[in-house]
Image 1 (tube, rainbow, N blue to C red):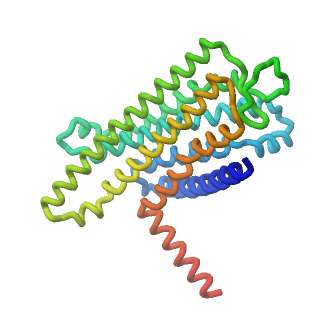
Image 2 (image 1 turned 45 degrees about the vertical axis):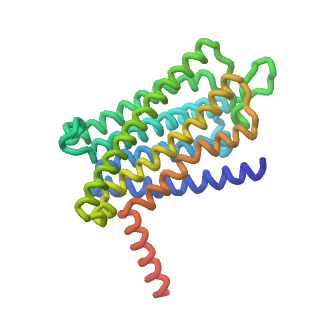
Image 3 (image 1 turned 135 degrees about the horizontal axis):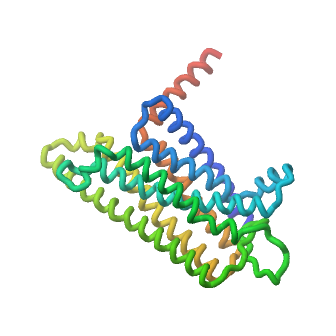
Length: 305
């Protein structure tokens, strides 16, 4: 258990640092008016991942708010609500990223081509809707989460050292689970559909390039690199999200959380937010060039010293 917690702490630290760096990069790019439309989506996704890390293992938050004389019950409700909202945003924005890229690379003769000229407008509307939807959809966490009390009669489900889920009516529990499942199935279905569509387009493009003897052009295509990155992220997200969903749903239905299973679930839940910024950093030429320039600058400074 000790080694599992060490691995989880390392994963959390790595993911948080990578996402903070990425958020700083996207914020600077957007403020300097040199951003691509995709950068706004990636910036929102990165922000949601940072908040997931900050609220995922919140023992330090208890100490922080405790010094301000804020009650444990309020802390648990606030942290559980924010974490649930950010997890919902993560799946919604990943889906939007997949749809956005599918429209971007779609041929001019396709049905999706007519959305290209208003893509940025649709993107802003979608982000606004996702934030509004998840802020309201996750409000049940405020009512059914609170500070853990060592009273067996309350039948609480302990989910962290300080916080627990309160018992809920079977109808309410079933309704919440059904609505969450329907949301996730729909969004994952959209992601898989757009991913299949993008793979078909890439396959056709590759065949055309081979026919025209210009395979080197295909390899250098920014659209292809971006599409491959998003496909990789979507596939990894789908696998990790459903493993996490199965573990959490089973625990709530059985009303039982084993400490080891809880640690494994946190590791699975944090896997996507950790891998995403590393993949984005390694596949974005702008970031690679910036890091190379920073390396040269540091080398020159140390050389002078």
